[in-house]
Figure 1: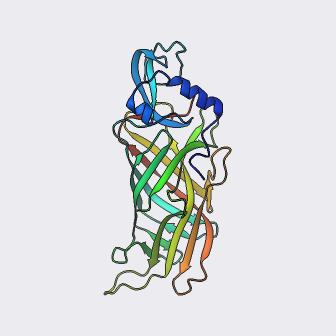
Figure 2 (figure 1 turned 90 degrees about the horizontal axis):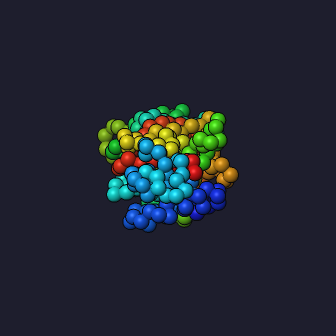
Figure 3 (figure 1 turned 30 degrees about the horizontal axis):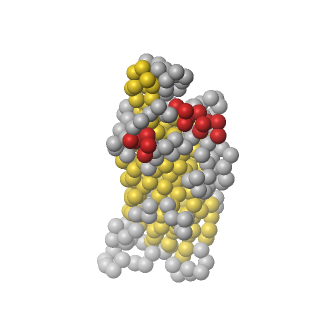
Amino acid sequence: MRLVRRIGVCALAAGALALVAGAATASAADYPVTGLPEIGRCLSKPGSGGFKGLKAVCIVHSPTHTGNFEWYPGPGANASIKLKLSGPTFETVNGRKIGCAFLFADGELTGGKTLKISEVQIQGCAIFPENLACYSNPLEPNKIVSKTPLVGELGFIPGAINPANPFVGWDLKAESELSPTIVEFSCGESGGPPPPPLPTFKVSLEGSVIGRVKPTNKMVASKIFAMIYKQEKGIQKPSAFIGGPEDVLTQITTPTVNPQNPTIEQAGLQTSGELEVGEALELKAKA
């Protein structure tokens, strides 16, 4: 996957460009329109906005640019984000599972369609069926900390009953073009006197994963968006943006006693939680 691969339908992009032609703000220049879906701000601009209405909903156009609201793509002064997920579980197509209690991530929005995560912490993790603790540091069992930079891209995903209200998802992957690894860690026996025992497995999760984000088409004053990841028997739901190639996770489980014989399997993530943003924003899915 490439961030420049999907910029939306040409007609949508052209329409969105017209909406902000009259906006002369630093943030609009910093985050140029790249097509829907897009995160940004629907802000008051009485008498000279590109959208009609009495509420902050940038849907009904004002062709004469005499509306009350204007659309500004991307974040404003506070681009920070925090991802909080409960009970994240990775399952492979062959039934192996890594179950955790919580996942926390910190980062920032980097544009109208993109974000970057700088640190991920996953707590209470174990690999099954062996029921072994998973960790980054053997002195802190059941805790995984990763500072591998990750990037996210917005796109349309299947599942919407009404095409006029499409579903939107974030596709998350490693920032580096040289390595697809999202997170890597060890799993093994924990506790007992030092030194800690050698791990039983080295585990790497590679590729990308798509999760649905909602709500869409309204300013979220609470600064909280819901995030939902679904999978079934190791197959992510969805596994691609509409019209895009497959974007899935691969789990590589390597026995430390036999590192030449890793098990490589497709995997899916099941969890839900919230994406907290630094200011009131809207996820725009309608032109």
